[in-house]
Amino acid sequence: MLDLRPQIYYNCRREQNFPPRLRCFFCFGGAWFEVYESMFYIAGTGSALPEKVVSNDDLAQFLDTSDEWIFTRTGIRRRHVLTHERLDDLAILSARRALEDAHTEGKDVDLILCATMRGDTFTPSLACTVAEAIGSHAPAFDLNAACVGVLYAMEIADSFIGTGKAETVLIVSAEAMSKLVDWSDRSTCVLFGDGSGAMVVKKGEGRLAGVLTSDPDSHVIRMPNIEGLNSPYNQIEQEKLAMYMDGGEVYKFAVNAMGHRIEEVCARANLSPADIDWYLPHQANVRIIDASLKKYKIDKSKVLLNISECGNMSATSVMVLLDEYAKKGTFKKGDKLLFVAFGGGLTSGAVIINWNKE
Ligand code: ACO
Image (tube, rainbow, N blue to C red; front, top):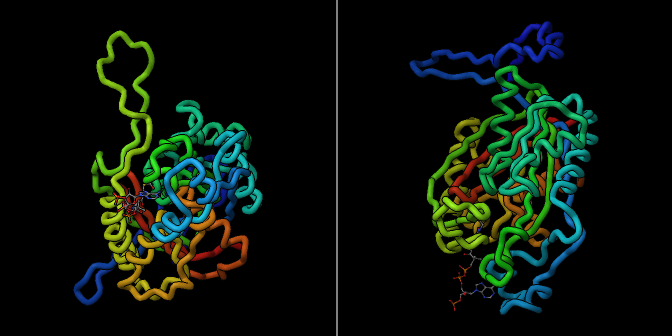
């Protein structure tokens, strides 16, 4: 896409005073068209997983389950689980790896976004903890859109860059799912894993389109917060502090939502699903991924997976997937990557980017 801004733009960098995103509208053949300037590209990626690997057979030692049940129902063989590490440590490590990959220093980051359902502390936010570790004074905050968090963060980054408020954004995701589930509930705990991923996005050509939605439903997936301690006033009974999920309902929502978001984001980018080089779907269940892509007859070799090794790491899933395949050299310059995810809320979204990393 065109970058029509004058060169003086680049000289304004230090004052954080960037002119706004340029859009133009024109009429052709009786129809109005909008031209959007592509605002960011992915400049670097990183990830960090806990040391401890727990296999399905390990779970079968204390749960009434089996490798066969878990693998055939979900595609998961094993997952990483936090033991001695803190989630903060993983987040900082993945952020440092992404910065190094992008040849960028912490002090040059203009915004830090961290997608997480729950960090080690409510405050400071995970984003501020990362900021402290990398020596940044940029605005930093956490956002919670469950498994779609990274896609929400990419769209926020696009808006900050597009409106001239930032040029370089660090997006981190970190999830400690093992601390949110009830380890005696075999219908949920076998599905999840822990981990962190990060990406540095910079002003430039890359993002082609994005779509975010919510279909609010507070019952299908629910993770209560703590009600506080010893309040003489609070009369609300503490809900069970563990993730509740109606697997069947989530399954139906997920297949529908992923299919629709793919269609919508492709339409916005003026592409067809067949034009996409790589699909990076949220890694919740292989059967959900297969079912949502089925109608587009996508070649399976274009659909990237790591669920068998990592399970569902919520927001972090697409980040770790991206880093893994980027480091393998899977993406070539100009390849079109489509991220698609669904999660608690219920939320869903999709983003298409051109892979323009140097
Ligand atoms: N091992 C053995 N048996 C089990 C297990 C287990 N781990 N878990 C459940 N079962 C049993 C059930 O009790 C049930 O037994 P019953 O028939 O005697 O009652 C039986 O297996 C079948 O259970 P279903 O729920 O019908 O199994 P299904 O084929 O639907 O698969 C699953 C369940 C894997 C949870 C599926 O519904 C699913 O993937 N849903 C989507 C979940 C998801 O994507 N969550 C992530 C979104 S939220 C987020 O990411 C933060």
